[in-house]
Length: 215
Image (cartoon, rainbow, N blue to C red; front, side, top):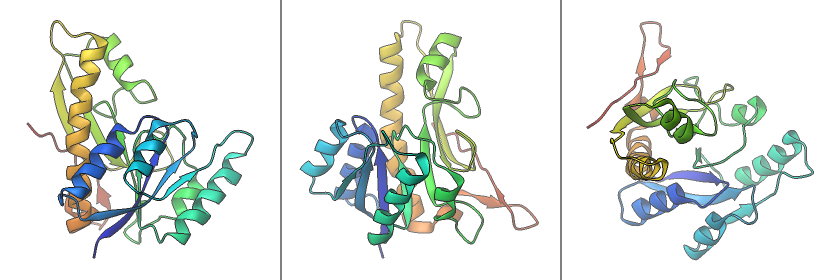
């Protein structure tokens, strides 16, 4: 049975595109049952519609966070969404939203991608902050979402180098190439073996984060 996912976006949707292409190529055993966007002008909306996907656009402007999320949750329930995939969604989800996707194993069935090697450089400007700091190696993190920002059990990390002649643009483009390869790989693993295939448990049965650095 294919995993039913909802992909959340706010911008141009480059990770959405990578996920769509991987699914269409048969590399990810999942179905995008809906794409959720809080920005009516986002190119990701056009992209999703071009692939014939169900799209739910709801601007957060003029709405409380709780009211906005309540409308989204109602839509997700109508689509029987099993897993939420954040792909450049520039909104922090509340605990009430996450509770709707609480797995019996203790984690939330919500996954996010972040453009640094967490816990370094949390926040919305990961590429910029890492580049300005002068890192020699940066990377991409994919993690389950909890109530803290850019936090939660890590499913995978993959590093990439900063080159001597890098500009912020070339640095970001190298990172994006890693994002577009790694996210579909992680989603394929979740669809095939569940989150347990990417996490370990301690002796008490609790989930431990496992950072995976791959060449």
